[in-house]
Image (tube, rainbow, N blue to C red; front, side):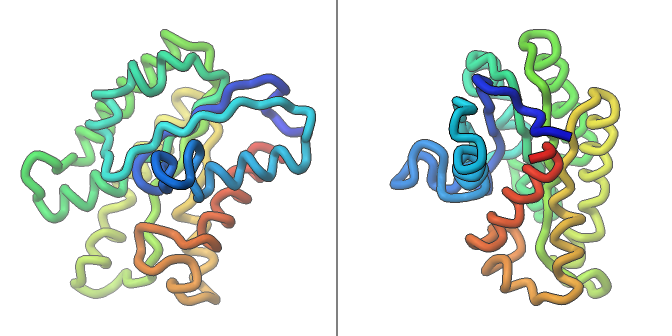
Length: 214
């Protein structure tokens, strides 16, 4: 199968800090993470593809934030392809009961659905849904990390259901990292479970492109 993104397309990535990756700072406009790496790898292999990339990730965002800025930062761009990765801030705030920031699994599902319904109604974009992830193997203790891993499937289940409902491409970052953690320590991919280092971002870029038949 050939690469699914045709020449001349506008590809928009949105999400939280993992997508942002300093795209509003020294690494403007695409950031120094998986989004910028995807753009560079596509350019290297398909130099005449003439794609336009937009990164609208914002550090600290959750699904509620995306809902609030969806018109300005997604719909107005009228992308041909839209990639969404959101959720780790939702679950962290929910587990820690952070006032004003907690997003339950049900609210996550409701807001995510509303955003995708708007994409279908107001754009012609093809959608790529990316699982939130947590780079840890602490599954069986009573630590905070173990609690995240215990409840993360509630959020992952929403992404899976929406991917099936809307017929999207589905990139399973959490599953990918769990496989790599069988033979590698977590620090190989990031200094803590939420934010990958360069190696982690490179694996993410590769996995995205693999799903898109790069």
